[in-house]
Amino acid sequence: MTLEEKQQEIVEEFAVFDDWMDKYEYIIELGKDLPLISDDKKTDDRLIEGCQSRVWLETDVVDGKMQFTADSDAIITKGIIGLLIQVMNNEDPKTIATADLHFIREIGLQEHLSPTRANGLLSMVQKMKLSALKAAAV
Image 1 (cartoon, rainbow, N blue to C red):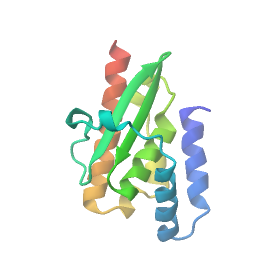
Image 2: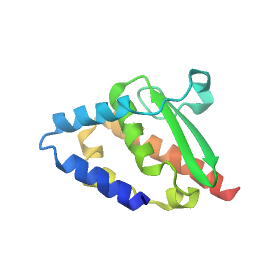
Image 3: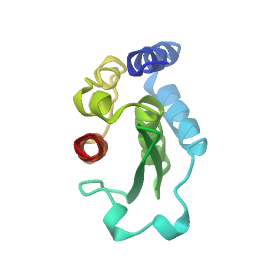
Image 4: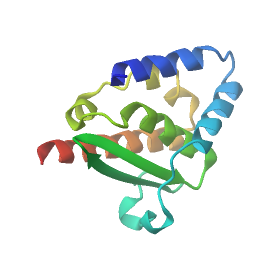
C-alpha cells in the first residue's frame, strides 16, 4: 500500500464518525495498538521537542524503508503518533521527506486539537520528516 493509499484509508476511517468525541476515542484506540519503543530507548535524545507531553521516537532504516516506533505518556498523543506511523512506516525516506500529509487537514485533526497539541503534532511530523531526510542523504 502506498503512502497515498494509507492516507486515503485514514480519511475514510474517520469519515465514519460524525462527532469529534468519537474520533478522539478512535485515536486513543489507535494508540493502544502502537508498536512501542523499548524502555531502554526512552532517552532524552529520542524525545520530540515541542510536545506538551513526552513523546519518544525511534527511527531506523531496514532494507531502504523507514521504520518507526514510539511511545508517549499521554494517550491521545500516543494515538496521534500512531496515526503518523501508520502512514509513514515502511516507506522510502525520500517519499516521506517530500510527502504532503494531507490526511491531517482532511480529517480536521489539527483544528480539533488544543494549540499545544497542534504544535506537538507539527513537531512529530517535522521530526519524522527530518529523520527521513537524513536517511535519504546517506
